[in-house]
Image 1: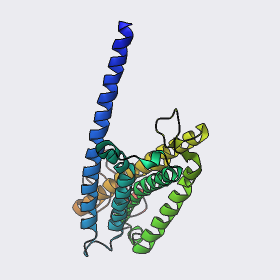
Image 2: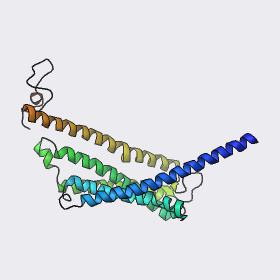
Image 3: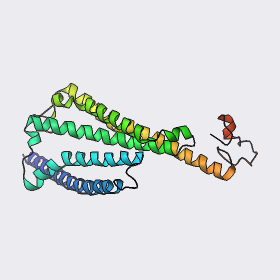
Image 4: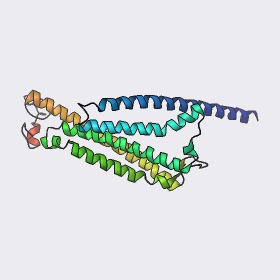
Length: 247
């Protein structure tokens, strides 16, 4: 009996600690997220920046992040601090609407950052035709594609999610195993893994392009190493790729 009581007390203590950490982190994310994204918006709407494709991506990503923070963190913070009831847990319409907005904006934000990385690669590329692909027309086109695709992917949350569920991590949760698997995979792949992978690839490409420009500035051609060094490992990069100093 004593052992059971000790275990129960231990579990209760861990739950209280977990709740306190969750509460603290929610407030921290809310405050830092709001301040950081609002400052981003203030910077990106400046007249000298607002018409640059990359800045448009970052501006809309910051606005999307603000919506994610407000819709995702604010209800929990109000419930914890001011004892306001979280209607998204008890009212099905609010539950579905919150999930659709949260997941859609999160996906849009991830892909806008991905597009901003690709734009940096294009604008810094030595190929003039690729640099010309960085323009406002293409920017608005891809923003529309990303927004429409995100809404299309997460519209199913209106069917899959419901409020007042029992035996789930949250009361507002996916109501079937199939819905849970699909939404977990979609969040992992579409919102996180694929955008992160593309960003890493193009960040590497930007770094490689920067090195090529540095190499051209110092040695007069694009490539690796010192072309004046005629050792075994020196070979003109331009010749192997079909151009000699110009692209």
